[in-house]
Amino acid sequence: MSAGPSAVRVAVLYPELLGTYGDGGNAAVLAARARARGMGAEVVEVVGSEGLPQADVYLLGGGEDGPQRHVARLLAQEDRMARAVGAGGAVLAVCAGMQVLGSAFRDVDGSVPGLSLLPCRTVEPLPAERRAVGEVVVEADPSLGLPPLLGFENHGGRTALDDGAVPLGRVLRGTGNGVGEASVDGVVAGRVVGTYLHGPVLALNPALADRLLEWAAGVGPGGLPDGDERLAALDEAAGAARAVRLRMAGLGG
Image (tube, rainbow, N blue to C red; front, side):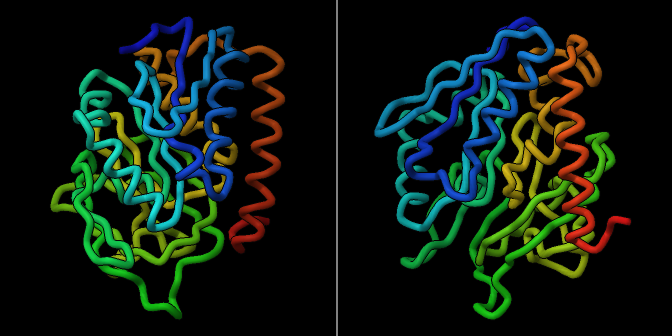
């Protein structure tokens, strides 16, 4: 599946259905960071009832109940998403996208089967007065080797992880998955990452973007080509934005 270290293909899945909160911007971040490292980058959008193209990274965003249920049906057809993951594609699934990739999620009509590509299930809503809205700061799981992750959340679901599942990280500020006393956000299984962080999350967390690019290029941590002045500018802008968001979350100087 990997296009090798010289190129990366990013597929944005059904943005007309799962395109809230600017999650489509994650594709622009990946492409910009790849090009700044001298890598080729192509972004394709999958719309309507189209099947999935061959790609190195697949992106799913947030959305409402009806579109979410429809996307689950589309991705289950001919095992589209499972085959893409099985072929080595990396995946970033945000909010509703993460819920779809779990074993089940909930909408106004009740529980809906998910794709079981992530070891989680979203079957219980948060109380209406506790809807998760606001800034989030997450201490990434040590296995990922990432700095704190920042973003914002806006969801009413609770996502429970299966026994032994690895969360994206521990919540320092915000709600995250909203289950248990030790609050965590998201879940990671192989090259598939789920999270409730909007933002778009990769604009605020370039280290996570680079980890997806490493998976796409088939290299280990730190194995991407060196960047040019464009990458330095991207990192500087992300650093400034992170500082502002940390202050907003009450964790910055």
